[in-house]
Length: 235
Image (cartoon, rainbow, N blue to C red; front, side, top):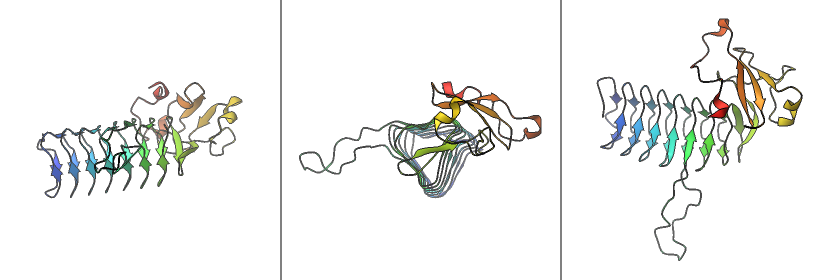
């Protein structure tokens, strides 16, 4: 399903039954399989794969060579860097347990990338993981567990190394240093601040995440703001 504002490159393969919303763009050699849904304003990069039944939200930016397999859901405003992979089988086999060809039926592990999350180039999200709102996954990371809202994770396996603002900037603690990952630090002073847009957050132990306590100042009104950032830890 397309309209006059949808752009699909001549070399892209889009199966019947795909839903492409207004202003969506599909670049060259991308493959979108049946039952997938692409939201308005979203861009599917060159050589990317969107598997059967995958839901892509609005204004999602998917770069070249990204693989999004069955069982994944990508919410609005998510960024996927080049060659990122959303895998769907935690226990892959090419053979059945008795040694016969074919492997066991794949049971897709659900992956959800929440509103505004970013995944760096070459990162892998393993089936069954939830990446929280406005979290950032560093380039080349391998995510094997859920990532809280606003967390910054890196490495293999990925682990939290700090926190980021909704605008993408690294958050600072009361001393002005990059806010550390260790939650014990926040027992005495739970507040974190962005020195770019001046948003302020508080660490919430029950969610092991952050909540916004002060919106950006008027002089930073150009920073992204969609009205959803003050309660994302409860989503």
